[in-house]
Amino acid sequence: MPGLLFQKTPAQKAAYLNRLWNKTYIDDCIEHNHIRDKAAFESMVKALCSSIGSLTNPNRIKNVLQSKLRVNLSIDTIQGYLEALEQAYLFEGAERFNIKGNKYYGSIKKYYSVDVGLRNAKLNFRQQEINHIMENIIYTELRARGSMVNVGVIEGRVQKDGKSEYVQYEVDFIATNGMRKCYIQSAFEMTSSEKSEQEKRSLKKIDDSFLKIVVVGSDIAPYTDENGFLITGIIDFLKTGADKLLG
Image (tube, rainbow, N blue to C red; front, side, top):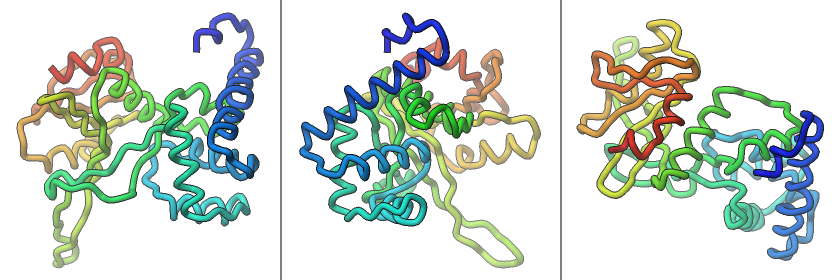
């Protein structure tokens, strides 16, 4: 949003972003898609802003709107609102993909804001969960560099109390660009061996030879660990560019 550079104070910047939301994007969506209930539409926008990086589908959104915001919308209306927001380039939905099963999970997606500043302004700069915001930034960087992005899951079994249990391990991103592919975990903090193992566990379950990356929130020099995973800081990740990493 280049106009933001001409705003001098934080208050002016927030007001500018809110004007964009309300007078440009929201009003345009409502007019273009003939949306009758502006309040309900804006409630769903806020719900999406609050849940970036969380697995969801229209039914879950319906339940959130009913329980937390006292807004009652049909599944068809919610689906129509989601399509309107994606067509306006305000949000993108990343489909969930089973890596070993080689299949998609229907309507389950993670929704990311195309512009984090607009998302923050919509929430009045509350709900600053830095781990979710960093995940959103990684997603938008991958998309800006031309990658198709899915969120991944890999299945397995573990022994617990003498019993075999079925578990699902989440992989934050599967980035594909032509024949190139990589798997990416977003880990804002990885300050202990236990946390490191937790963040890398899903990547260790993937047995193909594509690049596996862990992006951390600290500013570190990139290195390759004993598993062959590339560990890099978010700043270097953005400077290097996802296209080069995929190469």
